[in-house]
Image 1 (cartoon, helix red, strand yellow):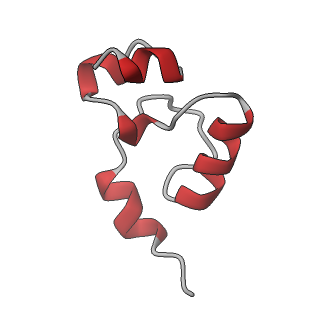
Image 2 (spheres, helix red, strand yellow; image 1 turned 180 degrees about the vertical axis):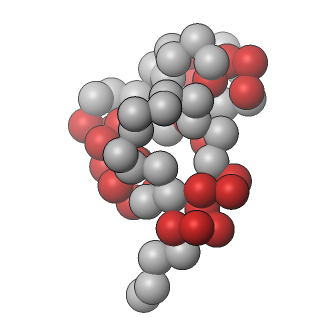
Length: 61
């Protein structure tokens, strides 16, 4: 399966600028799950900007 990095980047709402995983959804998801978090795309923009990507914060939405 071909990764559609450029298409993914257009939809990515991650505001963390030095992120090396933008557009590589599988890498992003793998990273955040290892950290007991969810990626930015699981949160509305106003919550994503807080960088609180915990499961607890997700359950409060």
